[in-house]
Length: 173
Length: 418
Image 1 (cartoon, chains in turn green, brown):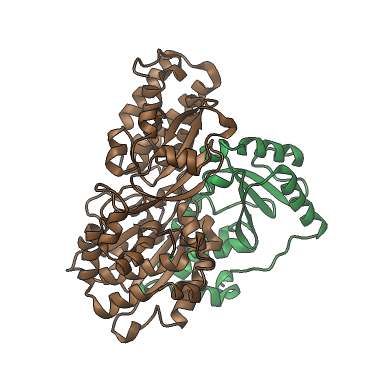
Image 2 (image 1 turned 60 degrees about the vertical axis):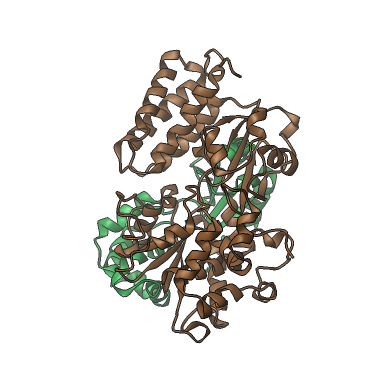
């Protein structure tokens, strides 16, 4: 029984159609994103299911999860706030932003708030150097950019999620 | 008439809409190419325009296209939208705001090398951009501007987006190909180069987003028009991503031959809090760092003249450092980045960036001794020239040039000439 295949038959067909039929392996990263979509991380079972679909070894699929930073093999908060603190953003105050945000949420970078809603992480360059402080938000509806941020408006956004209850959002992809 | 070549959205509102883009003559160049020019003629026009790759290496675009192995088929084209180097954020604006000119450029490039299946490789973080481009591609297919038997000819073209998943190294063209093939993004040994052995082992052209975006107007207005926009050495225009300690960071499209002074003080509004400018990183985190003296500020922005100064124009990602910033901190940040992004394939880069990261942290935290600074310099010198791809080479540029050109920041005697 292949859970992934039975859950997303249409999406998988669409993904596979992008690549020459003898080069199915190219679909492995889109399939990993698909497997991660619902829960925000990739379950071990999904590795073998993807392997089955593409006819490659489970370990080869796993090696990609380890290599690429946008794939996660463990559960985190419903939302990951990933703050860029690379050179250019740091020149415009992103390190202070990260510290301020974490202090307000009473966590350290890399940790999740007690209610399991938000994980704050420090990440490398996101190609938005002119609009720091900035972060990308990784959640159930994919990835979005938030630029020229302040601790205040970020906390407001988080409060908004808390007030609106469970962060179930419509899937767009 | 727009005063821009690439950032035309700045004075043509809604150029991202197909109707507006077509009112500006959009897709006429692609149609002209497919219906009245041989692929080789298109390549010749691009060659004559003097256009060089805008991803950083500056390789002549038309020449690259002409290297495609005609004895091996199919041919592929891949647009590199993996923009990930600290300081670089031009491709994102182009795709967001002027996507159809980019797609038309990709289409023309595909026709020029006979590719019928083309991929746009975007960094995974550009998730929303990929969806946006998918929508544009669908629309173009519906309008008969992409797809089967274009303009009544037997040429067909399918363009797909493909998302990476967070790895700077995938901007390196052979690592990108590995990633697109569903593997870890680790660079290949070269030669063979992609125009003979690329995607799926077939001849492949890989160009940066900005490079492709130049192509439609080059075809429309001619190679001479484009060449005349720039200088003898560097044809055309360039988008400079200006960031760091300036008042107005952002993308600025300038003809080659402008100066850093114009870019930083006229367009960028000068230095934050009117502090003194100290250093310029001309090409992002991988730059050989320049002291921002009058000579540097007034040097024309061209590939050759920046090289003469001891750096590279690269992707035109200009990071400005002011007097409040210590170079010890700057190299701690750049080395951290390359250490994190090293793919682990070759030893000098994998081990070297790890040890440089230890040393730069110690030096920054104030525990430095002359011995450690010399050790850092030695490690960096030993990485240089010994790596499989440019990432390892990039990792030492800031370190070596900071210590050489800003010795006073490392407790050494200042250089006499400064």
